[in-house]
Amino acid sequence: MKLLLNILLSLCFLASFTACGDQTVTFDDQWKLDNEKQFEKIASDPAYKDNKITALSGKDAYIVYKSIEKADDDSPRPAFTDYVKVYYTGWYKFDWSQGDTYPGDDGDTFTNKREFVYSRDNIPSTLAVSSGIVEGLSLALQHMKVGDKWEIWVPWSLGYGSNGYTSLNIRGYTTLVYVVELVKIVE
Image (cartoon, rainbow, N blue to C red; front, side, top):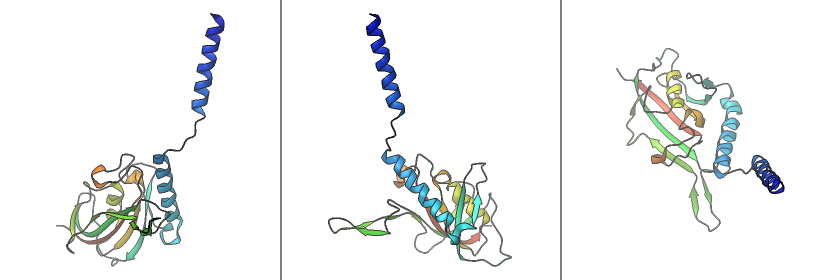
């Protein structure tokens, strides 16, 4: 009986030791790593490097942006409680190692860059700076001036987080990119 107990305890110990050493990388883990790697690559690019805005929520996170068009120095900035009119497009990629489109093994062309939100019919969209948009976009809008047009990179922690946004087919841990032109602050 004592021998059987020792064998059973040894097997339990061995099983727990083996489970602790399992370093299997899942598809979700790889997705997260690829998205974080791409964000850090962009953040270190000279066009974005000095354009970091740290999260206001106390998170240890930041967005990066590149100015496409610069507003006049005296142009106003929206406050957190404002509504704004913007032209914007939001996108992400399924595979950061590929271009916007790429050929498949069977000759088909795959679309890698997925737009998930955009202004329709060349009419500016009205957004509440404080709600209904991801934290990273809200943060950027508060630092933009009317007339600015930026390309904004948002890490997953300031985007749709670890859960993603199912109805838009955005998986958790996805890096988001927005191109935003701030047209006006709604009075």
